Amino acid sequence: MLIKRPDDIRPSEITPPAVYAERRRFLQLSGAGAAALALGGPGALFAAPAGLPGPIAPSPLSTLEEPTPRKDVVSYNNYYEFGTDKRDPARNAHALKTRPWTVTVDGLVGKPRTFDIDEILKLAPLEERIYRLRCVEAWSMVVPWVGFPLAALLKQVDPLGSAKYVEFTTLYDPSVMSRLPVLDWPYKEGLRLDEAMHPLTLMAVGLYGDVLPNQNGAPVRLVVPWKYGFKSAKSIVRIRLTDTQPNTAWNDAGPSEYGFYSNVNPDVDHPRWSQAKERRIGEFLKRKTLPFNGYADQVAGLYAGMDLRAQF
Image 1 (cartoon, rainbow, N blue to C red):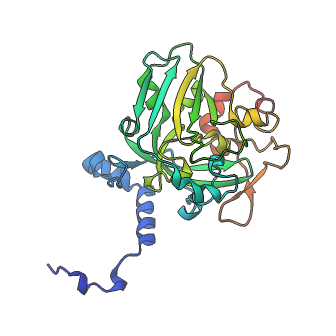
Image 2 (spheres, helix red, strand yellow):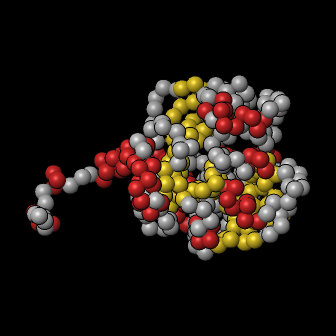
Image 3 (cartoon, rainbow, N blue to C red):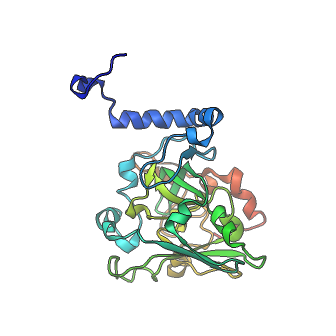
């Protein structure tokens, strides 16, 4: 067998990184992951990069839409603790320290507990889910998240029968974050317990096969793909189960503009702009906004009997 040494390899023979990444993406979507499982179990899946433990399996919950280029996903962000311009988080979030990091889960639970981030990473097998993320400003992305179902974390603490809602509190460190009173810090969000336990609701610890960049909500964030992006709280430090609907940052700041549920609904306009169409980052033309961001088949039943105009 001929083995080439580095000096023998011509530049034209080296696969460009972008081509390799797209080839891996194609193999995942075409079922290579399933074939690997059949041949060798979970260990046969592609190895996790540094910082993410264990193999990462492609998820059947993923959309088959083309992901938004990584450079856009990591440079165009809403993270007001690091600035209100979309480019500010990428410039400023490097100051965020993501180790050590803990997440406390308490409230109406049988086994309240504080998890170290490394414990969280081992709670469930990591999987890659390609999800749409739509923001209320009428722009959207398709992001390959790496994470695990939020339900896997909540089951560790035994939610009580009286628990109806889940409140998420994010980090607020004024030594590295903005002190402007844009919102009432720390940032808080909330879901109904059945929304939180839904299989689509993700605790994300990475994207594009790597650890989360700070500006995208490192080291652990929520992703709720059928709701507007601000519902997906970043850099979470506490999760509390309660029997009453929790206050949330944007609903407190503008209750007529940002409802508690914030399901993507093209028929409910923001008071200052239409939500009927959206522009995918990197595209020029707008596309029609889909009810529940295209996840209606999976989640519409959660809201049977509700007036989604009044409870927006």
